[in-house]
Length: 148
Image (cartoon, rainbow, N blue to C red; front, top):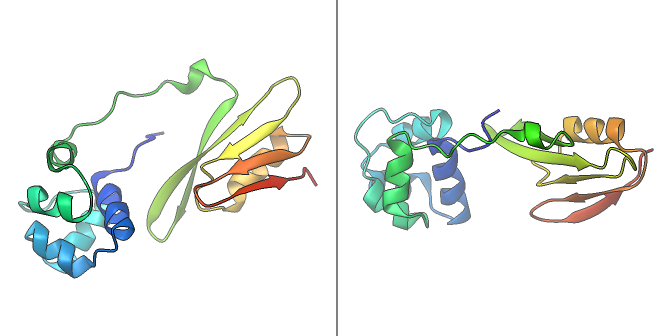
């Protein structure tokens, strides 16, 4: 599982957090709105894109965004070192978001954090692993859940 967002995910999320319209971002990038939407959906650059103008508009570092567009990836993380940690992918609105389930093998206490799109899959995994109450952490809230 790739734990990182692709180029389009990064641009879409930064644009949304910066409250920048598709039209404004496309203009800065030297793309049409359709081309920017395709880039956000696929992560693939179909034509020359001006990342030096787009990046500051959406709150990103221009050279780092350019490097990602040119294929830079972080080193792969080998989660096998932590057998009680599971990344779980959730998807909605054309965006894949990872969440993570961690637990203690002996007590079966668990925590679900960065809870993604709050879809059933993470909760089902949590219930299979944990026999006690758990804490779920997300960007917007923290909640306690019971095994029932």
